[in-house]
Length: 96
Image (cartoon, rainbow, N blue to C red):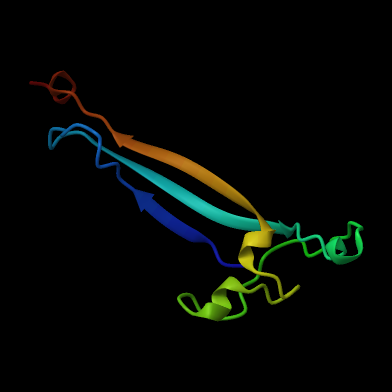
C-alpha cells in the first residue's frame, strides 16, 4: 500500500512574521473496499478487500485501480490523518 503525504498551506491566512511558521500535513490512506458488488441484482455484497493496493506507479492510470479487487480507489474507505506543526517562538522566549 502506498501512503500519500500532502502539505497544505492556506492562502486566506493573514501574513505571518518570519519567526513563526505553521504547516499542516495530511496523510491519506485508503482502507477496505466498500463497493456493493451485488447492486445489479438488488442485493448487497462486498468482496472483502481490506486495503487499497495500487496496480501501477504513482501518476499513471493504473495507480487508481486496486490490485487486490480491481475497483477504483474511490470505492475504498478514505482515512485522513491531519497534523499541524507549529514553530511558535515569541521575542520574549529567545532572551530579548
